[in-house]
Amino acid sequence: MLAALLTALVALPSPGDHPRTIHVGGVERHYVLHIPRPARRGPLALVVLLHGAGGSGRRVAASTGFSAEADRRGFVAVYPDGLDGVWGDDAPFIRAMLDSVAHEVRVDPDRRYAAGISNGAMFVHRLGCELPGTFAAIAAVAGGMQDETAAACGTASSLSFIAFNGTTDRLIPFDGGDGRLSATESAAHWARTDGCGAPLDPVPIADRAPHDGTRVRRTTWTGCPPGTAVVLYAVGGGGHTWPGTWATRLRILGRTTRDVSATRVIAAFFLAHPRPAR
Image 1 (tube, one colour):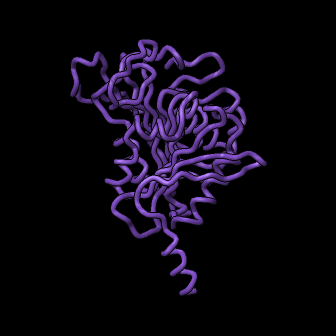
Image 2 (cartoon, rainbow, N blue to C red):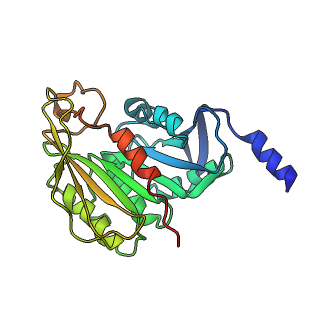
């Protein structure tokens, strides 16, 4: 027992980024494992961050600043790559990746989380449904739940959920359509799964950046079981962007709010919502 413990301690990766390759279903898959600075004793919380279509793990890490937040709060961050930059039927890869990480790092199974943007946000809804009991909470940015995911998700276990959606998102509209639920309906799905009650009236967030052309409102569902929560941030005037980052130069993506940092809010929400005692 002591020898095994010493081996595990010696094998723990050093703080920083570590590229990793695994094979799943005969296909080579890649991810980056970020160990927080300074080194922390386990078991540690873990956050999986999923890029949008055409992106990569390294790019979403850089654009969101999630590794700096991982260092500040002391959790492990994992940045997987979709095949050809897209997420599809990738739940087996995510499961295998989590198993691979667990061989290197002492991960708290009650504090595993997943977040994603755009195509990654739609996939994170799928992970909540297809890997029940794996994640304590998920977060979706600029992406709603697909109709087919909702239809197949009736038996998913409860989990906490937080979302950020721009009301003027031209790529994945706030009001849904084209095979996707609206932002509000997507959040309401998880509220029903959790057994929550009705949502409260939206609460305005302080307009800390009055020149960015956005106003943010937060909706919270009531009556959720102890330890769970469902929250939606509606970014009025916001586009297909990650709140709190610098404005994109691509006009089709729309405005980026600076009133709130999705990275900081998501990290705080995750760590405040471990899986409730069973």
